Image (cartoon, rainbow, N blue to C red):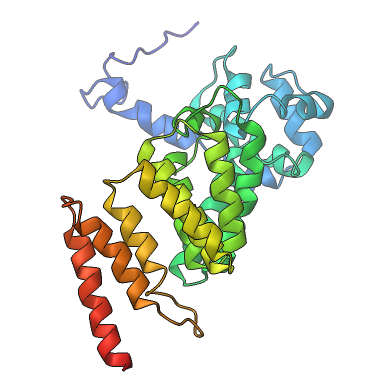
Length: 301
Protein backbone atom coordinates (compact mmCIF):
# COMPACT_ATOMS: atom_id res chain seq x y z
CA UNK A 1 0.00 0.00 0.00
CA UNK A 2 1.36 3.43 -0.94
CA UNK A 3 2.16 5.98 1.70
CA UNK A 4 -0.67 8.50 2.21
CA UNK A 5 0.53 12.08 1.98
CA UNK A 6 -0.38 14.15 5.02
CA UNK A 7 -1.57 17.76 4.74
CA UNK A 8 1.58 19.00 6.49
CA UNK A 9 4.00 16.72 4.61
CA UNK A 10 6.36 18.14 1.95
CA UNK A 11 4.58 18.33 -1.40
CA UNK A 12 5.72 15.46 -3.71
CA UNK A 13 6.01 17.92 -6.62
CA UNK A 14 9.33 19.11 -5.14
CA UNK A 15 8.32 22.73 -4.59
CA UNK A 16 9.49 22.63 -0.97
CA UNK A 17 6.06 23.77 0.25
CA UNK A 18 3.72 21.81 2.48
CA UNK A 19 1.25 19.63 0.60
CA UNK A 20 -1.74 21.63 1.94
CA UNK A 21 -0.20 24.87 0.62
CA UNK A 22 0.63 23.47 -2.79
CA UNK A 23 -0.90 20.65 -4.81
CA UNK A 24 -3.61 19.55 -2.36
CA UNK A 25 -5.85 22.47 -3.31
CA UNK A 26 -5.09 22.00 -7.00
CA UNK A 27 -6.09 18.35 -6.81
CA UNK A 28 -9.27 19.20 -4.92
CA UNK A 29 -10.28 21.85 -7.43
CA UNK A 30 -9.56 19.55 -10.35
CA UNK A 31 -11.58 16.78 -8.71
CA UNK A 32 -14.56 19.07 -8.13
CA UNK A 33 -15.87 18.67 -11.65
CA UNK A 34 -19.57 18.59 -10.84
CA UNK A 35 -21.85 21.53 -11.48
CA UNK A 36 -25.62 22.00 -11.59
CA UNK A 37 -25.83 21.58 -15.36
CA UNK A 38 -23.83 18.37 -15.34
CA UNK A 39 -25.90 16.77 -12.59
CA UNK A 40 -29.06 18.13 -14.22
CA UNK A 41 -28.23 16.31 -17.45
CA UNK A 42 -28.47 12.99 -15.59
CA UNK A 43 -31.74 11.10 -15.36
CA UNK A 44 -33.41 10.76 -11.98
CA UNK A 45 -32.58 7.05 -12.00
CA UNK A 46 -28.91 7.79 -12.72
CA UNK A 47 -28.73 10.29 -9.86
CA UNK A 48 -30.18 7.82 -7.37
CA UNK A 49 -27.85 5.09 -8.66
CA UNK A 50 -24.79 7.29 -8.13
CA UNK A 51 -25.97 8.28 -4.65
CA UNK A 52 -26.33 4.59 -3.80
CA UNK A 53 -22.75 3.91 -4.92
CA UNK A 54 -21.68 6.52 -2.34
CA UNK A 55 -23.42 4.54 0.44
CA UNK A 56 -26.32 7.01 0.48
CA UNK A 57 -29.24 4.62 0.63
CA UNK A 58 -32.17 6.50 -0.82
CA UNK A 59 -34.67 6.11 -3.62
CA UNK A 60 -37.66 8.04 -4.91
CA UNK A 61 -40.01 6.81 -2.17
CA UNK A 62 -37.51 7.58 0.58
CA UNK A 63 -36.74 10.97 -0.94
CA UNK A 64 -40.42 11.93 -1.00
CA UNK A 65 -40.61 11.07 2.68
CA UNK A 66 -37.43 12.97 3.50
CA UNK A 67 -38.49 16.28 1.93
CA UNK A 68 -41.14 16.63 4.64
CA UNK A 69 -38.44 16.58 7.31
CA UNK A 70 -36.14 19.30 5.97
CA UNK A 71 -36.65 22.95 5.06
CA UNK A 72 -33.92 22.95 2.42
CA UNK A 73 -32.21 20.73 -0.12
CA UNK A 74 -28.92 21.72 1.51
CA UNK A 75 -30.06 20.37 4.88
CA UNK A 76 -31.15 17.13 3.26
CA UNK A 77 -27.78 16.81 1.51
CA UNK A 78 -25.97 17.37 4.81
CA UNK A 79 -28.15 14.67 6.37
CA UNK A 80 -27.00 12.26 3.67
CA UNK A 81 -23.36 13.24 4.08
CA UNK A 82 -23.18 13.14 7.87
CA UNK A 83 -22.54 9.37 8.27
CA UNK A 84 -19.98 9.13 5.47
CA UNK A 85 -16.74 10.81 4.41
CA UNK A 86 -16.44 12.06 0.84
CA UNK A 87 -13.97 14.21 -1.05
CA UNK A 88 -14.91 17.67 -2.28
CA UNK A 89 -16.08 16.45 -5.69
CA UNK A 90 -18.58 14.01 -4.21
CA UNK A 91 -19.85 16.59 -1.71
CA UNK A 92 -20.67 18.91 -4.60
CA UNK A 93 -22.51 16.13 -6.41
CA UNK A 94 -24.64 15.31 -3.37
CA UNK A 95 -25.71 18.93 -2.89
CA UNK A 96 -26.54 19.42 -6.57
CA UNK A 97 -28.39 16.11 -6.59
CA UNK A 98 -30.57 17.14 -3.64
CA UNK A 99 -31.54 20.41 -5.34
CA UNK A 100 -32.34 18.77 -8.69
CA UNK A 101 -34.25 15.84 -7.23
CA UNK A 102 -36.33 18.24 -5.14
CA UNK A 103 -37.16 20.34 -8.21
CA UNK A 104 -38.15 17.25 -10.17
CA UNK A 105 -39.97 15.18 -7.58
CA UNK A 106 -41.38 17.64 -5.06
CA UNK A 107 -41.72 21.10 -6.65
CA UNK A 108 -44.95 21.60 -4.69
CA UNK A 109 -43.02 21.52 -1.40
CA UNK A 110 -41.38 24.92 -1.22
CA UNK A 111 -37.87 24.73 0.21
CA UNK A 112 -35.41 27.40 1.33
CA UNK A 113 -33.66 27.48 -2.02
CA UNK A 114 -36.95 28.21 -3.81
CA UNK A 115 -37.95 30.81 -1.22
CA UNK A 116 -34.56 32.51 -1.38
CA UNK A 117 -34.69 32.66 -5.17
CA UNK A 118 -38.19 34.15 -5.15
CA UNK A 119 -37.23 36.59 -2.40
CA UNK A 120 -34.26 37.88 -4.41
CA UNK A 121 -36.41 38.09 -7.55
CA UNK A 122 -38.79 40.26 -5.55
CA UNK A 123 -35.99 42.67 -4.70
CA UNK A 124 -34.95 42.74 -8.37
CA UNK A 125 -38.48 43.65 -9.45
CA UNK A 126 -38.64 46.39 -6.82
CA UNK A 127 -35.40 47.88 -8.15
CA UNK A 128 -36.94 47.83 -11.63
CA UNK A 129 -39.89 49.83 -10.33
CA UNK A 130 -42.26 46.86 -10.61
CA UNK A 131 -43.38 46.88 -7.01
CA UNK A 132 -46.65 45.02 -7.59
CA UNK A 133 -44.87 42.04 -9.16
CA UNK A 134 -42.23 42.02 -6.43
CA UNK A 135 -44.87 42.13 -3.71
CA UNK A 136 -46.83 39.25 -5.24
CA UNK A 137 -43.64 37.16 -5.17
CA UNK A 138 -43.26 38.04 -1.50
CA UNK A 139 -46.89 37.30 -0.63
CA UNK A 140 -46.36 33.82 -2.08
CA UNK A 141 -43.31 33.42 0.16
CA UNK A 142 -45.27 34.56 3.22
CA UNK A 143 -47.92 31.91 2.62
CA UNK A 144 -45.18 29.27 2.29
CA UNK A 145 -43.47 30.38 5.50
CA UNK A 146 -46.55 30.57 7.73
CA UNK A 147 -46.91 26.78 8.21
CA UNK A 148 -43.34 26.70 9.54
CA UNK A 149 -44.11 29.09 12.39
CA UNK A 150 -44.97 27.40 15.68
CA UNK A 151 -46.82 28.71 18.72
CA UNK A 152 -43.62 29.00 20.75
CA UNK A 153 -42.19 31.47 18.22
CA UNK A 154 -43.49 34.61 19.89
CA UNK A 155 -41.10 37.02 18.17
CA UNK A 156 -39.94 37.31 14.57
CA UNK A 157 -36.46 36.83 16.02
CA UNK A 158 -37.52 33.36 17.20
CA UNK A 159 -38.63 32.50 13.68
CA UNK A 160 -35.23 33.01 12.06
CA UNK A 161 -34.55 29.29 12.54
CA UNK A 162 -37.16 28.30 9.94
CA UNK A 163 -35.38 29.91 6.98
CA UNK A 164 -31.76 30.00 5.86
CA UNK A 165 -31.27 32.40 2.97
CA UNK A 166 -29.62 35.66 1.98
CA UNK A 167 -32.10 37.75 3.96
CA UNK A 168 -32.98 37.75 7.63
CA UNK A 169 -36.71 37.38 8.22
CA UNK A 170 -36.49 40.28 10.67
CA UNK A 171 -35.42 42.61 7.84
CA UNK A 172 -37.47 41.11 5.03
CA UNK A 173 -40.78 41.18 6.91
CA UNK A 174 -40.35 44.91 7.51
CA UNK A 175 -39.38 45.50 3.88
CA UNK A 176 -42.54 43.70 2.86
CA UNK A 177 -44.76 45.90 5.03
CA UNK A 178 -43.29 49.03 3.45
CA UNK A 179 -43.37 47.78 -0.14
CA UNK A 180 -46.99 46.64 0.07
CA UNK A 181 -47.81 50.24 0.89
CA UNK A 182 -45.65 51.57 -1.94
CA UNK A 183 -47.45 49.22 -4.34
CA UNK A 184 -50.86 50.43 -3.10
CA UNK A 185 -51.77 46.84 -2.19
CA UNK A 186 -53.66 48.12 0.82
CA UNK A 187 -55.88 45.12 1.55
CA UNK A 188 -52.91 42.76 1.32
CA UNK A 189 -50.99 45.09 3.62
CA UNK A 190 -53.80 45.09 6.20
CA UNK A 191 -54.02 41.29 6.19
CA UNK A 192 -50.25 40.83 6.32
CA UNK A 193 -49.66 43.27 9.18
CA UNK A 194 -52.48 41.80 11.24
CA UNK A 195 -51.15 38.27 10.70
CA UNK A 196 -47.64 39.36 11.66
CA UNK A 197 -48.80 40.90 14.94
CA UNK A 198 -50.95 37.86 15.75
CA UNK A 199 -48.09 35.46 15.04
CA UNK A 200 -45.28 37.44 16.67
CA UNK A 201 -46.74 39.66 19.42
CA UNK A 202 -43.47 39.70 21.36
CA UNK A 203 -41.40 41.08 18.49
CA UNK A 204 -39.44 44.27 19.24
CA UNK A 205 -41.84 47.04 20.21
CA UNK A 206 -40.80 49.29 17.33
CA UNK A 207 -41.59 46.53 14.82
CA UNK A 208 -45.05 45.86 16.24
CA UNK A 209 -45.78 49.59 16.32
CA UNK A 210 -44.78 49.97 12.65
CA UNK A 211 -46.97 47.03 11.67
CA UNK A 212 -49.97 48.46 13.49
CA UNK A 213 -49.47 51.90 11.96
CA UNK A 214 -49.19 50.30 8.52
CA UNK A 215 -52.44 48.42 9.10
CA UNK A 216 -54.15 51.68 10.09
CA UNK A 217 -52.79 53.39 6.97
CA UNK A 218 -54.19 50.53 4.92
CA UNK A 219 -57.67 51.06 6.32
CA UNK A 220 -57.45 54.78 5.61
CA UNK A 221 -56.47 54.13 2.00
CA UNK A 222 -59.37 51.75 1.32
CA UNK A 223 -61.83 54.31 2.64
CA UNK A 224 -62.31 53.02 6.20
CA UNK A 225 -61.17 56.28 7.72
CA UNK A 226 -63.02 55.97 11.01
CA UNK A 227 -61.30 52.64 11.68
CA UNK A 228 -57.93 54.14 10.79
CA UNK A 229 -58.55 57.10 13.09
CA UNK A 230 -59.52 54.81 15.96
CA UNK A 231 -56.39 52.72 15.50
CA UNK A 232 -54.10 55.75 15.43
CA UNK A 233 -55.84 57.27 18.44
CA UNK A 234 -55.30 54.02 20.36
CA UNK A 235 -51.65 53.90 19.29
CA UNK A 236 -51.17 57.49 20.41
CA UNK A 237 -52.52 56.55 23.83
CA UNK A 238 -50.20 53.53 24.00
CA UNK A 239 -47.14 55.34 22.63
CA UNK A 240 -47.60 59.03 23.50
CA UNK A 241 -43.88 59.78 23.06
CA UNK A 242 -43.46 58.16 19.65
CA UNK A 243 -43.05 60.98 17.16
CA UNK A 244 -43.80 58.63 14.28
CA UNK A 245 -47.33 57.97 15.48
CA UNK A 246 -48.11 61.67 15.07
CA UNK A 247 -46.17 61.96 11.81
CA UNK A 248 -47.79 59.02 10.07
CA UNK A 249 -51.22 59.85 11.44
CA UNK A 250 -51.03 63.45 10.27
CA UNK A 251 -49.52 62.46 6.92
CA UNK A 252 -52.74 60.64 6.03
CA UNK A 253 -54.54 63.96 5.72
CA UNK A 254 -51.91 65.78 3.67
CA UNK A 255 -49.54 63.56 1.73
CA UNK A 256 -51.27 61.10 -0.57
CA UNK A 257 -50.58 59.74 -4.06
CA UNK A 258 -54.32 59.48 -4.79
CA UNK A 259 -55.21 61.78 -7.68
CA UNK A 260 -58.62 62.59 -6.19
CA UNK A 261 -57.31 63.15 -2.68
CA UNK A 262 -58.45 66.35 -0.93
CA UNK A 263 -56.01 67.45 1.79
CA UNK A 264 -57.33 68.32 5.25
CA UNK A 265 -54.66 70.75 6.39
CA UNK A 266 -56.47 71.69 9.58
CA UNK A 267 -56.74 68.07 10.70
CA UNK A 268 -53.11 67.33 9.92
CA UNK A 269 -51.93 70.48 11.68
CA UNK A 270 -53.89 69.54 14.80
CA UNK A 271 -52.26 66.09 14.92
CA UNK A 272 -48.75 67.40 14.27
CA UNK A 273 -49.11 69.97 17.04
CA UNK A 274 -50.09 67.25 19.49
CA UNK A 275 -46.52 66.02 19.09
CA UNK A 276 -45.04 69.51 19.50
CA UNK A 277 -46.98 69.94 22.74
CA UNK A 278 -45.08 66.97 24.15
CA UNK A 279 -41.63 68.45 23.38
CA UNK A 280 -40.33 65.23 21.87
CA UNK A 281 -36.66 64.78 20.99
CA UNK A 282 -37.40 64.14 17.30
CA UNK A 283 -39.84 67.00 16.83
CA UNK A 284 -37.79 68.20 13.86
CA UNK A 285 -39.56 65.53 11.80
CA UNK A 286 -42.85 67.19 12.76
CA UNK A 287 -41.77 70.77 12.10
CA UNK A 288 -40.48 69.72 8.68
CA UNK A 289 -43.93 68.37 7.85
CA UNK A 290 -45.67 71.51 9.05
CA UNK A 291 -43.35 73.59 6.86
CA UNK A 292 -43.97 71.38 3.81
CA UNK A 293 -47.70 71.44 4.45
CA UNK A 294 -47.77 75.25 4.51
CA UNK A 295 -45.90 75.33 1.20
CA UNK A 296 -48.53 73.01 -0.27
CA UNK A 297 -51.32 75.23 1.02
CA UNK A 298 -49.84 78.31 -0.62
CA UNK A 299 -49.25 76.45 -3.87
CA UNK A 300 -52.82 75.13 -4.01
CA UNK A 301 -54.54 78.42 -3.22
